[in-house]
Length: 356
Image 1 (cartoon, helix red, strand yellow):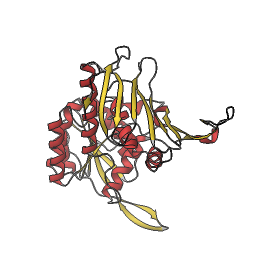
Image 2 (image 1 turned 135 degrees about the horizontal axis):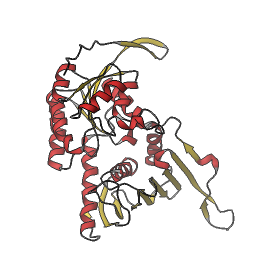
Image 3 (image 1 turned 60 degrees about the horizontal axis):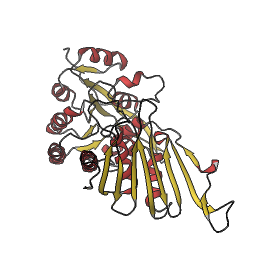
Image 4 (image 1 turned 90 degrees about the horizontal axis):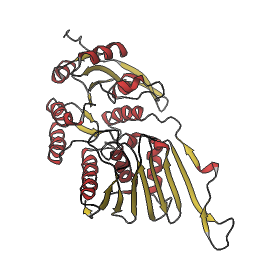
């Protein structure tokens, strides 16, 4: 392959509190040029950026300098889509030559372990890894430890944690806007280890840890991903309250919903996280002595600029700037993986309770 040109650091002018100052531009590379890595950028309907490559190519504080993939054709396509970006079939060569500040791993999940370990070996400041962190708990723990020893920040791409709109509502729920949690309903499609991963992480983000699960395989909710499961079941929150989890067939439509019912009202995260409906309990319009949930237009909130990958790139910059801590850690990802494994195990045992 052609040798890569030296990448020069550049600066841009940004305003902070009315004053201008130079801000560092962070060099980023992406490993994996498949759907989530690059190809969904070609979907005309998806808000942009829609991929790892798009996120770092379009962010004003990052420069996408390289991509790696085993498929030379995808590398040629990447170099056309993102002018100035160099393609590599060898990820380690790319890291050695380009010395990035950010490595974003969008390869198939079996490659997560070796690629995170590779980036940690080269002490990359921030390493972003697609979910799930790994298929194996031992590997996941080794990845976390390797990043700690290297001084690298490990970020797992549970993408909704980086959205300001959903983060704001998570804080409201945690501060008691719906009161004490009574019941929760969670709905997903595509498969337990795919969209279900996002849903379980969202439950933990809003409501905390899970104590035990009981689940049954949903054989009607066919997954689009071979080998994955769909399960329906119940999860018990450590803080109190239970979550009913349900799956639907993605061939009919996709969804991700989290409906939280508390003693003071309801927060309903719907439309894949684009909309939140907040309904406080109020006096019934029709029955004396009862409260009900009366939804009005004023209680339906839409995300204004919800582009999840934009949020991921912004979060990486804020972490590198030292302005915030990692919002989706390797430890968070291992907890989610543990819950997914418990749900699948319970499904195999036809609903038997499994502790988490």
